[in-house]
Amino acid sequence: MINLLFLSGLILNNLYDAKIDVTNKKPNPLTFKQNLKSTHIRFFVGLFIYSGVLAFSLSPRVFILTLCIHFIAYFYSCPPFRLKRVFILNTAVIAFATILAWLLGCACVPGADLSHLPLKFLAIIFTALTLAFNVKDVNDFKGDKQYGIATVMTVFGARLGKGISAALAFVGYILVALALGSRVFLFLSLLPATATFLAILLPKNKINEPLIFLIFFVSAATFIIFPHFIPTLFIYNIK
Image (cartoon, rainbow, N blue to C red; front, side, top):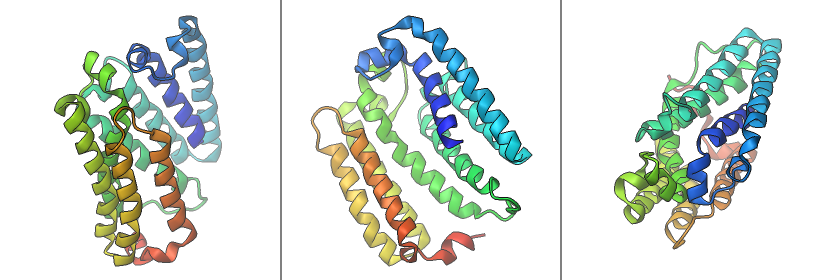
């Protein structure tokens, strides 16, 4: 389900970011073959319908959450809303969609009670992701500036914006650890936080986005495999 939702959102973004991606020299099938647009649209419709049927077969609440994530992707990428143009709101929208994806996983569990969600924990994750997701805009500076997309990079300039993006990504890692109140978690979070900071700040030209996401997923996997690093009290009993 997550793959279906991600791919459908990616298709919408490709449709309306083709010109920006040309400027940024970013891979996008529509930048080299415009007649693929109708194929993209049909593919999106197919994904939308398939994900809706799959979600409805699970439960009504999974279906509602799935529709919400689809609508968020539409509001983010497509005119007249195109929320990706709005400074701060653009990363916050993606962070909120990520939180909904987490809730989607919870809703898929039969009999799961969603009336007692750890709201403070979710708020912490939302804030951290809103800060960290600015990384995605570092390599898109030229195209975003040309077509009026307000990001940290276009608002503060290429050099300062890159430094701010690196700092925000660092703070995103540390914020979660501080909020959870675990010294061990804080110490271990310094490793991916510092690695991400350097991976953004040191390259003179484009940053290596796959490397940055690899650091994040390795970090997340570590705490999934070794959950004793995180005090479960703070995850499950935050009111």
